Image 1 (tube, one colour):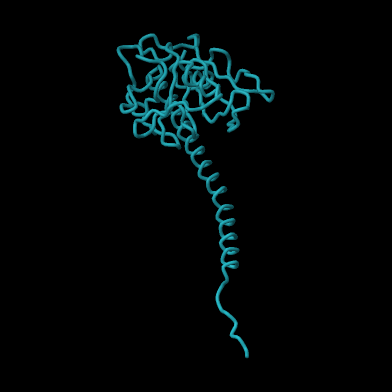
Image 2: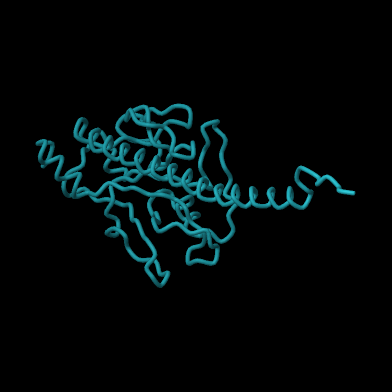
Length: 233
């Protein structure tokens, strides 16, 4: 007596198919996640470059640099008379006419040398600057990325983890990092001492895990543009 062969898939075959599909999906998710993160990084770089160019333009137009923003809701510069009410805070996006957020939808930070934001005693080629940017060398030691006390202003993004940033919903993201010493420096130095280095997710790395992004104004480029526009000397 012949038995009709059973049609369809067995449970083992179905399990094998599901395993293969799962592996394929898992293999696709990692590259997609990496691509999305890289897009956020690229978007942030573009926003920071736009902000930097706007700062150059503001200085050419006014003869001084803007103050940080009034608040996370009000992007006008926080100025009373000729002086700023703070030197370190949010990028004054409304005053500059640029994007408010970085690629992770957090507000960007901004720091300015007070002598460069004074709207009465306009800065000159000899005006002292007070912002220093450091980095890490191959051995993990802090080394100068700029001249000491040489930077007029800088723009900061607090990266993918957003530690210390303020979100688009006006929520402050607490610094939950452990050992992220360089990120803490960018948060706690008052804007006068910043660190810009390669990103790392390893808390054991020199300076700890790090994903901040820092873009600064070169005094030499600023002076060159001011002289070319006959705003200096």
